[in-house]
Image 1: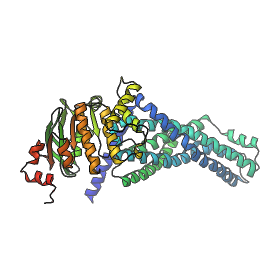
Image 2: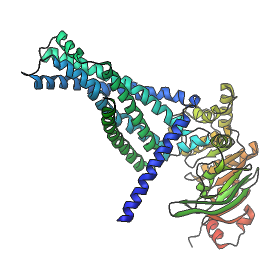
Image 3: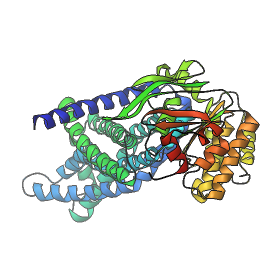
Image 4: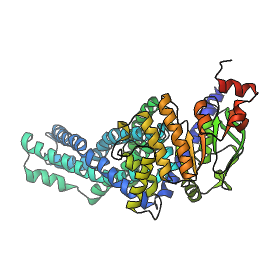
Length: 253
Length: 242
């Protein structure tokens, strides 16, 4: 048993070392803009534009539910215009970034791990290296850059969508007027609410893409290995998003 | 010249290469034969630095590959073409883009020159007109030929072939063999071919080396190997079960 624990501890330390090495290689590849700039534009479209429908769908229904739950909670105790406050604050600070992040961990992280895993097991990554390309410059940096840049943009749209659907719900179902909703929305608003949510989104984007790349490029075996990597990427990303969410709340709020 | 110098490599507890030493002279084609899983492809990957040795090294043009800095390794790789066992074509790119990718890495080549090189390389493997096709639209033999064309397009000093005829029918295998011979005659490149297809080995090789239990069991000309009295080599080349 002690031997098994020792083996696991050594494996864990090795894994941390590999991740550290991978991050160093990624940073080292950053100046090679000539290699990664072109692929980065392709990835920005894939990660950004193609993710908008699913993100907005989630945000729209979150806004509706938030408005209804706020009204249910406040009835008879808190003025109803606080619905605007709750919808705005919650979408900006928490639910916009986290729900979209978790959804995109599935969509972006899984597809990235599957794609890079397939490249790895079919020796296409080795082929790139023999053609004098650094996989870090050609495959990793464009994805991480695109994730870091595009996530705040997508999530900004998601936050706006959630607030709009919260407002529409308030108008149609809660008998709350537009001025009252806006009054609530502005009541405790601080600019920090905006940048905190978007900064958090950028870190989620970097995390999901890095995990997708690390897991994808360490794939072994054939189709089964690719399947395992895909699952691992989603699970690791989701866990890290929740940990990061708590970390930023402790550090920045 | 390529030289394996007392190369050792293990994966976990299992040693794969255990003191491999072998010299490959300029302009010759050396074929490495051996049972499946004896480390032939592993040896090949050390030449381009895709794997790091546990001990020993591969010396290419006087440079120890495992000690090269990244920029020097990149320069070395630009002089070596690598043909993968399953071609390893980039499946999201057209045939032309597969060939052009390595050339775009070379400074000083214009788009027209790259197009010319792609056309020439495809013509050499009898695949003119396939430029805009995707790898998924090609047969296994055609994919291997595109893999060879991708290596040829770089105009390398060395070409490494990893199991170039595995999985192909006899006629297509013969086409690939002829192509490897033609490549050497046209470009004068040094070739290292890893295979367990003896007909292919006899056709393309100047010399044949047998890898057995992590080191070279015998190396010699095609005639010497065909007449060997070493029981292990004889059994392998005759394909006898015992």
